[in-house]
Amino acid sequence: MIINLRVTTLLFFVLVLALAQSDRSVAISPDSWPERDGYLGLEASGPRVPGLGPEQTLKPGKAMIAGATNPFAVHAGLEMLKAGGSAADAALTTVLAQVALNAGGAVSYAGIFTAVYYDASSKKVYSLNASWNTPKDETDPRSIPTQGTASGRTALVPGFMAGVQALHDRFGRRPFSELFEPSIWLAQKGFPLPSIIDAWRRAQPASIERLDDTRRIFQNQAGEYYREGDIFQQHQLADTLKRVASDGATYMYQGDWAHHFVDAVQREGGKITLEDMAGYKVLWTEPTRATYHGYEVTSLGLPSLGGLQTLGALKLAEADSVTEHGDYRRSPASLYSLIQIARLQAVLAHAPAEQLRTIFPGFDPAPESRFSAATTKRLLTILKDRNWYTNALKKIPIGKPASNHSSAVVAVDEQGNVAAVLHSCNCQLWGSTGIFVDGVSIPDAATFQQDAIERAGPGRRLPETTNPVIVLKNGEPVLASSTIGSALHEVTLQNLINVLDLGMDPQRAVNQPNFQGPFWGVELAGPAKSQPEKEVLDRGFRDQVINGVKSRGQAIYEGVNGYSQSGYWTGVLIDPETRALSGGSSRKLNSFVEGY
Image 1: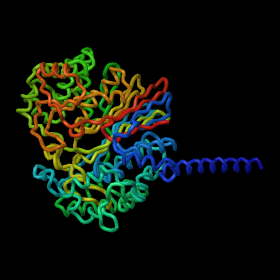
Image 2: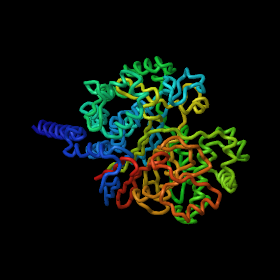
Image 3: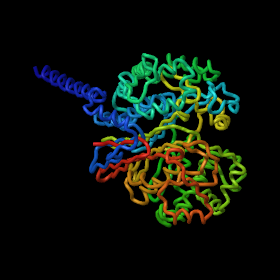
Image 4: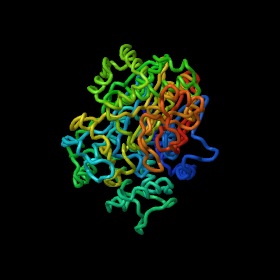
């Protein structure tokens, strides 16, 4: 009798737990959100919502999620956190929904995925690289067509879905299939087409209208293009996401989708094979680490170059005592120094090692020496020459940054786990080729990376410069951020200084004016002559500061539209003692922050 009672009690608790888990699963589906339509409305309203900003502060807070784009997707991540999901689960739920909400235009399920992750149980930071692989049969990358030419050779081996699977396998708590519930809901039931997606489609007729399968994705049953406000459904995509949710990422690398992808790319002259797809592996690498004013700053490890670039800039700023000159927004000396430091780190990240040895005699380009005292001293010497950048441009052909559309997510869960994620299509909207495979857009990311593909070699991981960051103090995470846009490194550097040195909360930090890097002729109104010797500045710097920078020899390009050459930062600040959480994100995009 006692044994039966114990068994009955045990079965009761198992049933209660199962029901609790079931209820949590239901909560993740948008069908159960009473405020669902309100979040869909935020998608349609764009980045400037009257009276509503992306910032949020919780004192104390349990969990928080911030996204560079798509309020609906950010809320999906919040629902995952409330359902007991980890920071990894929440970030992944959000990025999957972001792609569906962008119709594969600015981000893609066949794009790339990078992340740094703080695991509270082990108190370690992990670095995940799911970037492009080069095709094994691509032996003449310099002949890959540039942007504007439809060619299957512009496609690379994608890492996005493999990265999603790998991060969940290691740090996820909820079932893998639950991550897909919001994105499948969006694709299957549809959402009011935002004006921005309608405008993107109208701006890309050559790629969208080139292939019948692609054209039909953007047309209703009557054969007319969806317009702003129409309920936009992506039925092929919903079917694909359901298969990935049930079968795992293997479906996209060895299953039917992989076969359809290889067939589509090869029909257009591409070199990707089924062997390339089946052989793709996510890289767990040692994070790049550097100390800065008592903090430990971590980012992606090699072969990613973004961590080296961002942390190298911080180390130079520390060695040059930049903040001792004052707030860079008010100090010409500080602003000038940071501009030069950011420019130098960009050159170091993009130029081949043999060229760096030539133009900077005595400089050791090896990554392992980048933060050494000897290297720092040599780099500071280089920066003392006002003409160093002009001289470098004469010897190193540094091309302008491409239109690399991306999005970013930062998540903190109740257990103290932290995720900083970036995903990208590395392409113009939908790419010049306009290929869709079973509802998934195929980026043309090789159109501007011919040199990098040649240096990497066939069948190898392609280095990239994304830079999600987690900052630690006494071993505990205090700040996590991720940045997108052509000025991601400049903006990351400034916002880290704003928060770590100047004591700003994330939203106040991201609201400050920034320098945005050399002017590469990127204008929304049309092409302009590239003038890389000039630095792009946001509006908001005082004339006295601008003139002070000019007097030190740095030319300024003024008047660039805020969307045409910019960076968009997203961050969450964590107080390890009080558990206060504060999040912020660039208001230039339709960003959002939520927590509880």
